[in-house]
Structure formats: C-alpha cells, structure tokens
Amino acid sequence: MNWLADIVLVLHALVVLFILGGLIAIWAGAWFKRDWIRNRMFRLVHLVAIGVVAILAVSDIPCPLTVLEDWLRTGRVGPQGFVQRWVSYWLYYNLPSWVFATAYAAFLLIVTVTWFGIPPRS
Image (tube, rainbow, N blue to C red):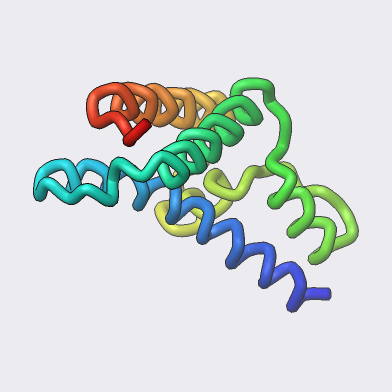
C-alpha cells in the first residue's frame, strides 16, 4: 500500500503547489498584464482550494488527504498535518498546529483580497 500512499502524497503536494503557485501566477500575470489570470474557473477553484484548507485547519479537522496517506502507510492516522509534517522535516520546525491554521487563514485572506484586487472575468 506504500505506492498508493506515495500517489496520495504526490497529489497532496500538487494541491499545495497549485495553491501557492496559483497566487504567485496571478500576481505575476497581473504585473505582466496577462489575461489568462482572469479566468473565472481557475480563480474560483483556487479560492475554494485555499478556503477548504483554511476551514479545515481553523476547525482543527485533519486534512482528508493526510488522513488517507497515513492510513495507507501505517493503518492509522498520524498526529501531524501534511504541511506541518513536511515543514518540520525540511526545516526542523516543530510548530503548534495553531500556527499553521493562522497561516492558512492569512493566505485565504490574501487570496480573497487578490480576487477583488485582480478580479476574474464575469
């Protein structure tokens, strides 16, 4: 089952990349005056993605992808979320979950402000 857990891990990393990279792409696209950044479907999916992440984190509900990955690897759910686990692994930070919930909520606010500052096409 480790190969399935690896697939979930890669999918999870792609979601994180979409959320982070999407905001950077929107800002860069606005700077370089690219019209594709105003694609309503892309912007809506991006907003919903970070919205779900923030709501789960603020509600202290574990991410379903993290739960699934842990279960596939060990048969049980681990104590850390995806970003918390990998930030701890890569940078040796062991931060409390409220720090990550605050960061997700702040990122949601930034994406929401960007939605209105660089609005999608109607």
